[in-house]
Picture 1 (tube, rainbow, N blue to C red):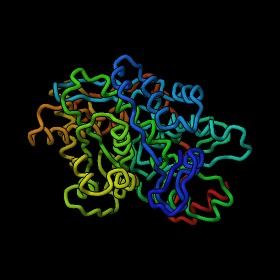
Picture 2: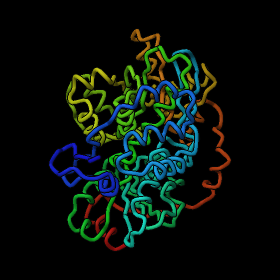
Picture 3: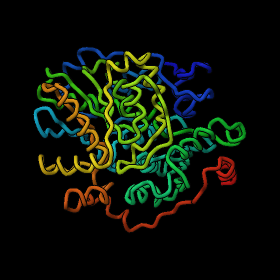
Picture 4: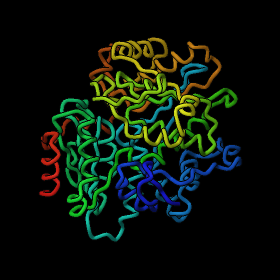
Amino acid sequence: MKYYSTKQQTPPVSLREAVLKGLPADNGLFMPEQIPALPSSFFEKIESLSFQEIAFEVAHNLLSEDIEKEKLKELVENAINFPAPLVSLSENLHILELFHGNTLAFKDFGARFMAQLMGYFVQGNTSTLDILVATSGDTGSAVAHGFLGVPHIHVTVLYPKGKVSNFQEKQFTTLGNNITALEIEGTFDDCQALVKQAFLDTTLNEKLNLSSANSINIARLIPQSFYYFEAYKQLKDKQKPLVFVVPSGNFGNLTAGLFAKKMGLPVHEFIAATNANDVVPEYLHTGNYKPRPSTQTISNAMDVGNPSNFQRMLDLCKGLDSMQAQIKGYAFDDAQTAKAMREVKEKYNYIIDPHGAVGYLALESYINQGNHNINGVVLETAHPVKFAEVVSPEIGQEVAVPERMRYLLEKSKMSIPLGIDFEGFKAFLLQR
């Protein structure tokens, strides 16, 4: 299968080129020429399938022309080796826990699969693949751990100084090896702009073999569609309309949900749940898309003022009317988010992180507008311990650090400070 640019200004490319290059030369985003529907037999047997088997069936549906079946099965089994359990808090409210991977965040799914795929594509290479990734929190840690020690690949993580949690920062600044962390004096949007400009810079592309691990890379989106099917499998009553609530920043996660729907998953609607950075909900309400500098919030992984994957959403939906028919948008401020964390703990004895709390608020608003008889699935995108300094004061208790992650808190960070000037970033890359 070929992959085209959303801007349609460059020729379609192979999966290998789309994955390793990351970004088309016209600054669009790669998309598959087809998203085939899964056969009805897949849905008929889905309850009997393991998560790995579901992931393989979905991956094979998209990638069968590009990767031999047994090799793809091996890649999937190496990447998707942790669960995504569905926790039901009420008849209408279900929480899909996506934090059981290496770095306690949903991005482990995409990062681990992408690391496996890229590792497969660079086998036998003598040159190094330089991966650039901007992070507002969880992407950096997931990518760093996913690629740690992978031969012929070096990862540079750019993150905004003082705008990620201590736990998040420790996860990607303490690894060393083939992982470099750059502490940028700016916002996530500044970090993302540096990465995008690097991909368009002629000199850098002549000297380095650049690729991306942000959700702009198609290899990140494909595995994120897996757990939408896994959530559906676990629902007891599949007759009620299925509504996925997606806490959203760069909108890769919601785009992956649209992929799943294209493949036949019976989704009634998606809910785009954001914090104060509400450019997509505003677009859904008004028809005007007005990107702007991001605002810092307590749900910092969603602090994105110009979400990259909006291009893909437009491409999939073919316009505002279709997008409005498939997606509802809601936005909430920090005070509402904090109150929601307290409410979920008091009402359900469940500890939810700030991003999940935004999703919870969006579902509550949706239900209160008359949508009562539904399966509402909120994507809980990170373990609350990653935001313990925000969560603990609200719920009145400490959030326990999982045993396998405690060692990080004792390690010292290794990061390099850098400004937002592109020439300084370019010079660093060329000198390294």
